[in-house]
Every structure is written in C-alpha cells, then in structure tokens.
Picture 1 (cartoon, rainbow over the protein chains, first blue to last red):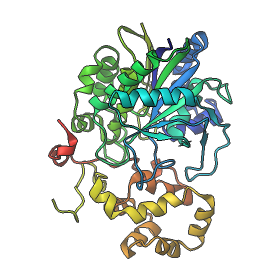
Picture 2 (cartoon, rainbow over the protein chains, first blue to last red):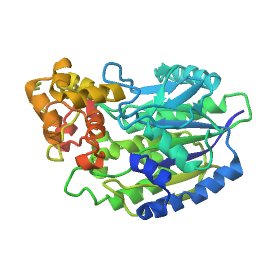
Picture 3 (cartoon, rainbow over the protein chains, first blue to last red):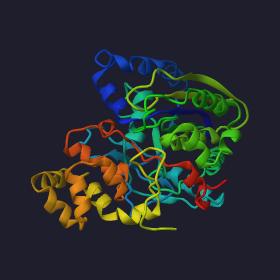
Picture 4 (cartoon, one colour):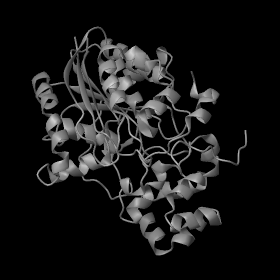
Length: 279
Length: 117
C-alpha cells in the first residue's frame, strides 16, 4: 500500500518566488529562510517520494466568487501556473496523477467530505512556491502532484477541526492506494501575521512556538481552536494555519521532526517551515 | 443583522469578507479578477473609468479604484485577494497595499454562528 512518509509545511508568500529567482546573494534578508530549507531538501533527496499532495489556498486565480468551493481536489493530468495579474509565469506544468486523484475523491466522499472536483485547475503562488522551495533544482518536477484547495478567501472558512479531519481522511485514502508509492503531504500558508495593522511586523512569537510544538505532539489541541480563537491569537491571516493542520492530519501514529525553523520575519509576514516524518 | 454596514474589524480599514460583503462587492471583485488577463490590464490602463463602468461599479467604487484607496475598497466590498490585482496595474506589491487579507474584530466575529465554537 502507498505510504504517507511525511508532512511538510511552509509559508508561501509571493516574495519567496522572487527570492528564489534572484538567489540569496542578491536577497540577503531571505538567506536564513532559504538556508533553513536545506535539511528538508536532504531528507527529500534520501526518501525520493513519488507523490506530493499539496494543501493550499487559492488567492483568486482558479476560483472566483461565482463558484467558490470550500474544499476542491484536482483531478487533472497536469497543472499550470497562470497569470495572477503580474504576467504569465514561465514554469513548466506540474505533473498530475488523475488515477490517484479519483481514488482520493472517491475515498473522501465515502468519508463524508463532499469536495468539489477539478479536471482543469490553474495553480497559484501558494501551490508553486513551496514546491520550488523544496525542489529548487528540479524543473519540471519529478514527483506527481495533487492540489487540494481550501477556501480562505470568503468567510465562513472551514473550521480548524474540519481541516484536520480532512487531512486524516486524505491519510486514510492514501493508505488504501494499492501501490508502494511514497507520498508527502504539503501544507502551505503562514502562521501568525497581522498585515496592515500597527503590530504588523510583530509576529505572535509565543503563538508560533506553541503552534510548532502542538503540530508535532498535540495537533488535536490546535484543531479544537475555533476560527475566532485562531485569528485572535495569530492575527488576521492566521487562518492559513488550517492548511498546516490538514497536512498534519495525514500523519498517523508517532511522528518525528525532520526540521523546523522560524527565521526573522520578513516584510509583513512571518515565514516558517516545519517538516515531520511519519514514524 | 444590518446588511448594509460592513462589520468593523480588528485592523482599522479592513473588514470581514463574508457573504454580506461579497454581495456588496461582487462587481468590484469581478472587475479585479478580470485583470488576471493581460489584455484586460491594457484596457483598464487605457481607460480606467470606462473599464469600471463596463463592470457596473458604483461611482464610489470607481473612485476608490482610480484613487487606489484600499481601506475604502475594502469597505465597499472589495476582497483583498482580488484587489491585489490592482497592484499589477500600478506596479506595486501586495505588501505595498499594507494589507494582504482582511482581518476582523473578534468580539463581533465570535458572535456569529458561522464562526463555530
């Protein structure tokens, strides 16, 4: 049976893309973050996963308010980057895995997650940047991908507990896929940040520390927070932690930490990384 | 619930983007979403007001767009994810807007059944 070997979670803000493009030499403030990815890259190199399920939030590329799903699963042969308003990016498409997508879809619906399904799906920076971060030297990427989009655009957002349960359901679905393929589940988004407020540059350090710990050892405790709790503690965009929780949900039993880092906040968001291995 | 008044948020000038705001800002957000296409960005740049008019924006919304008055755009139903498209037009980054996603005032938010427990 296929196996979820780990959960990788990272911020996805657009400036990561420009920092990767211009290199840390030219973007020295990004150096600590880019360097902090090294242990995760080494782990990936050693493990050679076949598949990445990417839990992310679309920022208004594939979905508009005319049809806005709470959860949407990609079932395409490939996924392309498209114009997010700043020009057409020149990345090769990411390879999909429609057979596994449909298995995932069938299993999720069976587990009472009535998700939307997408046979065409454009992916934005929230999907792209973490993949570029984890596999900087691969283009096109060898691993096959399945995007899973979670609504953070329009309230009501799904509750943290629901997102955690979605991750668990994804973990069950993968465990029932009859191959020996290795899967990483990636959750993208920020932890605490308060863009636009007077405390914009001050991240909620204690919240972030607790989050990093809880994600590893006690995710149920985070999942019990209401969305209001989360936003109170983590700031306006703290809702994005639901993608981290969903990714964590896909791991079962004992988990061990591959790496975590929380370098100096850059621009008006904090930038974090956490990688956990199953077992 | 008063459908006309946006809920004030934790962060001054930003509002909870919920169904009420989504109704109010639908045309505004649809216009911004259209700017994902380079061809539409050219049209917008050439005649911003006419472009807004074609999407049935209110006069207030049109002024807020041409002034790039972000707090006002948020009050008028703009969602930051779509408003961010204007940054491509004016060669700004999302960070320049000073906001990346709307926040909310939690005492009001907690009162909502949709917020859950």
